[in-house]
Length: 420
Image (cartoon, rainbow, N blue to C red; front, side, top):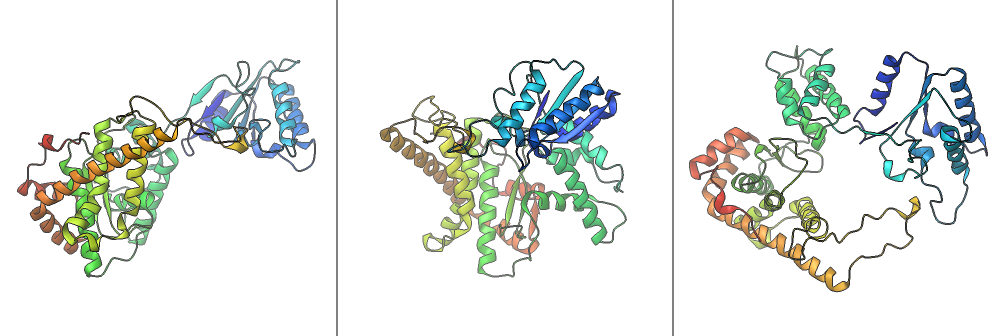
């Protein structure tokens, strides 16, 4: 059985749980322990492991990070030392070779199932794959309950609210989140973890360390307009996620941040949602241009523009959401060192490449026009919100929506549905 999933989802923990529940001998080893500089050592270790397992059958063997030894054979340019291949060959014959291994169950874990050798994944070997995905809201709540057992939480802390606020977090992220909250609580000399510490911890885990606040200056006002631009455009476009908070406190590389929190775990994203996200990402640059003019546009939108280019290109080349029709123009090519093609060939002509570039530009320009129009139409609200943001440095989503509702109708956003 092969446990497959992103890092931090609990594959090794699951194996530990199996070890506790199984009631039979349990052998645990890491894939990297087979890989040795001396010839034949890896293969002999595999033989020793299975010899010991046969003596103790029935039993379970757990191999963690199996991609260290089970990587595709013949990978790399020019061959080189194939000591790892001998180790893999020995593992393959032990698992399902000439002599049967009755009573031995092998469990392995990896987050790189795509690089494993096909002989390792054939029926009779690792044919049963168990996907260990990041948890949904119910799973996150239960993981938080486990990690909150040994921590003092104040009455106001709602684990359900934290679970709602953390879509996409793995079990390791949630454990780290509560640990960060506990550290902050100790630093602030408080008796128990409050919701404030949890919020700060989410920000820290997602965006990085808090920097020193900006002093009142032209730069601070410009960053405030940039962030309010994101928040206004995101709030007034129909399919965008709601604003959770806007802040001017620097974190990581960002000078200010606008947080959007999805209302539910999203596995599928519609074309309207992608267009809304592109418009929202361009809201900061649109606000800079509309308020300060072309000459004062800054480098602050570089991260936003990278995200916009990536999303727009994926719409055209992978999701078939453009005038080029329902085509996937990008083949999912592997790296050359994993035994894939030596040449990264393009699957389409230069004429199509030119049309792809034109479509990507068209999507970005269309969304930018929408963002600029929204900023122009709501300039009074933006000025009021910027003054408030400079004064308070952080505005939460509820307060933001209340102030915005005084100037414009927030829920009815039909007239701003982005279309191409």
